[in-house]
Length: 262
Length: 262
DNA sequence: GAACCTCAAG
DNA sequence: CTTGAGGTTC
Image (cartoon, rainbow over all chains, first blue to last red; front, side):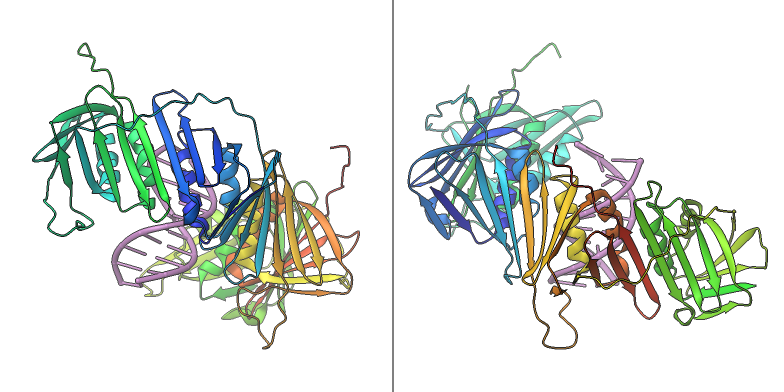
């Protein structure tokens, strides 16, 4: 028996919106401590990772760990039927073949109930070890989204250069080339202003990444004020958006092989 | 001689916009008391019905009753040439072959004149008797539009259940199933709040309807804050949008034959 | 999937 | 009145 309640359907809508372009179907692992999802994208280049802690829900119950295979597009269709400030409840019995999803308007005048068909999904589970990253960039998620959008009009790939001075995003294309430098700003208070950028670095590092994936990652910007970009030589880049009081959504992206012939 | 003036072209634009997807050509019956239109849709399942009273116009003159056959798509093209707050005038002589349409901007700086070719349309007139409906639902037209849009992503048909407790809209599809319940809210004042739903009922009744028609009906939502849905066993469902101080637009839709084999 | 348009909120 | 978000259309 699983039952979880969120006071704001908009949160769940944004989460699924951020993942569904990357992943068609995914397993949601429900346990006593919360919900986890891990899924490779269709081309097996990007890994999406979601963790929602039980204490982030207004109600949470999971008697027995259970994995629910869900088509994210179908899920998204149903979530679109919720108003942003509806309360949302998901419920499944043990060995259920459907997930019961219900929305209730703030005024209680409207109650919507949906049943989403569950599916068995073969998992290609990947172990993601915790790494000591060489560089960690923390920046406004909105600015990140903006930079990705801007550079996409120039080329297909972006090079992210992290140095002590800051982080540089550069792209090349037929029309020309461009680069955006965000200067590192040492934080005086514990928390930086929403817009400022910090770079924590042990060694300068740069990676070239396909912008189309970053555009998908940027869909998570509405979930968090800030994004952290974690880089280490010869390993996937990790993008993390913290969902306040609840968990985080992470994306891992393998760097592009630099092809000098192109 | 016919002459009618509306201070806001937007009203006429919305009216034609709401009907033109259902009906290609229609007869506009001009009489001393106002304008009436009645037309079956192409597949003869939905009936559109429009009544605009003479006193809703800022000027209205109709010396002799006259029927003007109009291609709604052509009419719509011309209306798109009007700004929303242009004044619009339509004018026709007896036995005219064209309808003269003119727009005047609020500032009087711009005057546009168009001539729309009239046509002879064979009418398949249908008598629509006034019925004593078993259930009348009154709800926000915007919420109606939203529910229709939401359920369309799930399936092709909607079942409307009216009971004393409220009205339920349900749909089934490949992704799963869904239903939305709007609770009846007894009105304390004469007028309900814009969002609340009322169900006046003598007997519970339900009907299954093709969502694609309801999506067309929902185009009339900008014309009225509220829609009333009138249901009676074994007869078409009637959707009415009141155009304030002027008349109403109605749609009648025959229920789907419930096919148990599907 | 992108651009346009419309509607709602600040 | 200006801006942003959402829906619709191409």
